[in-house]
Image (cartoon, rainbow, N blue to C red; front, side):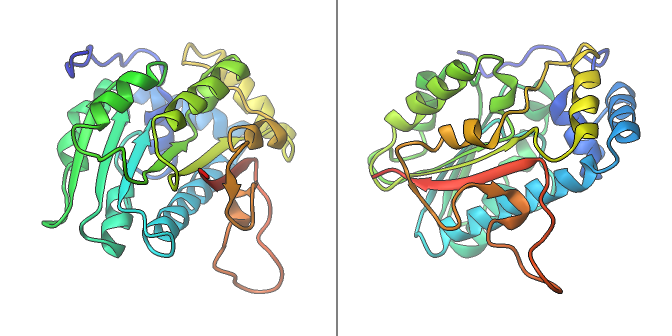
Length: 264
């Protein structure tokens, strides 16, 4: 598969660019900003949800690179670079960490140089590939990663783009099958239990011409981690996965569930 990406389509919104807009980034187009604003009108909480999801990713990577001792990461569906990308968090803990990013968005390819900025001791690499080709992803990742040693697999908000749940589960299983014992899966996906407005806004977004996103129940999201040893506190709303506590009580739950599991 060639790393040459197709031309960027600026006539329909793209989830990575809309997400970038909600995070305060500048790598988006008018069509993305319009879709993002329409979503915000129906569900103003989506921007905070996006930030909460990103914060969960940062905490999970920090845990894996620190306490768990992971030195290799495979970030599939990475999206556009913002702040505190996977390699930045991992290499701030372990400068020798190696990271492979995978995405099929042509705009991500144009920003690959930003992703490839690495510590002198470590390395990063960008692979232009499709989520639906897990074996090819593993083959390309093996150019940089030692797949006989534990890998931190990151699937952050991408599985909802797979319309059939069984197919999404199959993709996860096939990726994990190529990784050794001691590897970890970190997953975060949109859910449908806390906000009617979020579900309504998602339905309107899916009718915009963009690639649809399917929110799933916490039980379905937990299915991606089936067979793995869950890291405490298990599968929870992303705001409640090892949060930095401020004030009284736990943070409010949001419609984004995440968890980390270790492959036995």
